[in-house]
Length: 229
Image (cartoon, rainbow, N blue to C red; front, side, top):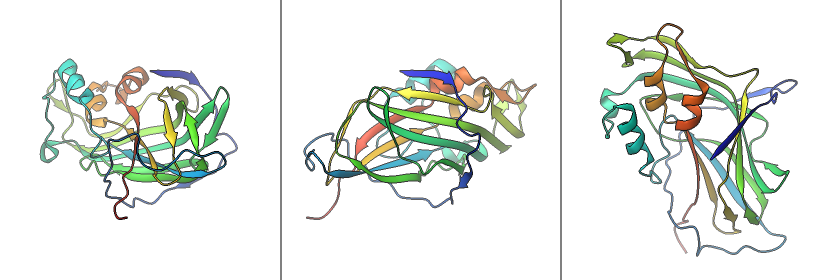
């Protein structure tokens, strides 16, 4: 469950623009059996973000949301919304109450293609091994540039569509327990699922309500299985 509150994380911070390098993602669904959690050790944590869902760890939540929104349960990217999605974000992992470890190097700005769900890596950091109980995500900009494919009440919507943020952004905490191991990288997947909340656009204002975005986007954690011996 996401716990939202207004924040001011971007004042006096430089925004680092992240290149649109695309990383093929092969993720495991196993949460145990790889590496060891040892006192004093370090393990890698990667943060991947996709305009849709990070591949190979997709779950059934998307089908349920499609059903609620009256959209087809399956999505064809050949018929999808065409354009780009630009966002600013920071990511933290929580070891305990008030003990957050930042995973990103300050505020990251990334632009993603709407019609290509390939994931982009926005952070990779070595953090102390052990148990973590939550992921905090800061958003400071969520803005789509629509070229085609978005239709609201029978009318095409093009141009800039933004999620209506309060102040300079918002913070959301996803409570999901996970272990960081020495020899098995941990992947935090930020699934923006833009194909769902963009269909809830107010066509008069070209805006999406923050609550609609908050209830649809997801943060998930999995271990990456390393190939080889």
